[in-house]
Image (tube, rainbow, N blue to C red; front, side, top):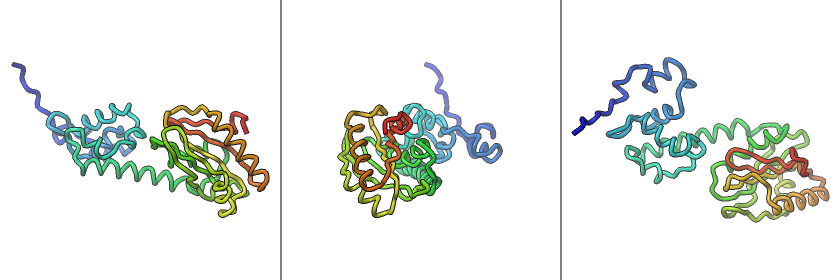
Length: 231
């Protein structure tokens, strides 16, 4: 019989390899995503350290924090060593990160599709169903407000043009950017997307409210109608 290899506790690692000590000595930027998660969960299981367990969980999500953020508490607790309290800590940390991003971009001026994408992705990047949002802008292209217009299933959300312009008039917006997600990850606009965009543009012309862009988001990428000359 082979000898059983005993797990080495983080406490017995060299100081350079301990996430907390590493953060103190070298700064938070020096830590990998797995090391940051290890700090949150504090301990691993009988065969894995906190870092090893965190690395495995991230690996199962292709090392993408966005994919990790979609995990439910129930999914996280399926890993040996991750109880409800640890799962809640991870979810809470990711939510704080999302809120920080929201706060950072809330009063942002829109200078192009990338700025619009940054404002929209905080709302719809982690969804498994489709949602349709609008960004309302003033005459200087300052972001006034973001509004969810509708949500639907895996591949569509019903959009009422009257609601879009009702929100714009209510907030005294002079321009609008449309945005929605494709849960499939594809960012290619459908014929329905194109038809809706031009319907909204025509309605905006009557009300003197300009449609600056329509952003489709999928798998942390985006398609811009404006950039592709489709407006």
